[in-house]
Image (cartoon, rainbow, N blue to C red; front, side, top):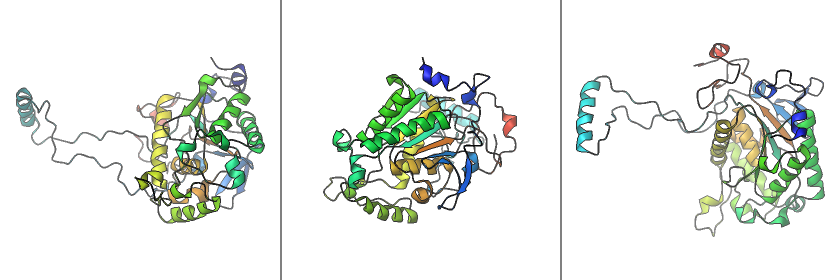
Length: 358
C-alpha cells in the first residue's frame, strides 16, 4: 500500500529488509566537522544532520527523580481478593505459604529508557519560516494553533521542499509515517513534505494530544523572539526552569513548560512510536525547543544544554538513527524493545559486551 515513489527509494536493498539494518549515508556525503557548540557533529549540509550511537554520550540527565524506585514498600504483601471474606481466607493461606519468602514484584515500566535501542529511524524536522518568524514573535498558546494567519511564508515553503528532498536524496528515506503538530506553521510544513515525498494522506498523522506542540512560553507569547534567550539562560541552570507564566491565568503553571516537562513528552512520544512501529522511517515535524529537547532525551545529554547542543534552524532536517548497537558498550543501552524482543536478525549474544546487558 506504499506509493511507487516511496518504494523506489528502497532500490539499494538487496535482501528486502533495508529498514531493519543499520543505515549509513554515503561517505562522500558525510563530513567530520567540529561545531561551535564543542561537539564533533557529522553534517551533511547546513540544514541537515545525522545522529547515531557515536554521538550518544553516557551522561546522566538531571532528572532529579529515581525512575527505578519501586512504589511498593519492602514490607508490602499482595493479598488476592482481600476485599471479601473468601479473599481474606485465600490471603491468609498465601501469607502462611510465603512467610520468609515474600518479595516485591518488579515495578511496571510504562515508558522506554532514553537513550535506548530504537527500532525505527526518525527524521526530526523543524517547520519552515512562518509569518511569526518574519515578525520576530513568539507563539505557543494552543488557542491559536488553527489560525492560518500564522502559516508559512514563501521562503518557508521553499525550505520544506528542500527538507523533503534531503530526506529522500541524502538519507535514502522511505518514510512510512509523518506526524506533525497541528499548529499551522508545522501542519502546512508537513503537507508540503507529504506531497513531495509521495506519501498518502492516510500516512499523515496530526498529533492532537499536544506531544509535538511548541514548548509553552506563557507570558512571552506575542513578545519578541529575543525574550527566549532569557529562558535558555535559565535552562542552563535548572532543568525545572519555567518561562514566566501568564499572570491573569486561573492556573498559571499550566501556561508554561520546563525542560523536564518536555522530556516527559519525549518519553511518551517515543514509547508510543516504538511500541507501534518496527523498522520504519518516521518523520516528526515540530518546533524549536520541542525538537532540541527531544534530541537531548534521545542522545542522553543534559536537558539543561538542549539549546546549546541541539538547536535547529528553520527547515532543518535531523536524522536520528539508533537502530544499531553502540560500539563502546558504555551507554545506557537496552537492546530490546518494550516487549523484551530483539530486532530482526539480532540475538542476545550480540550484546554480551554491553554494560548491564540482559
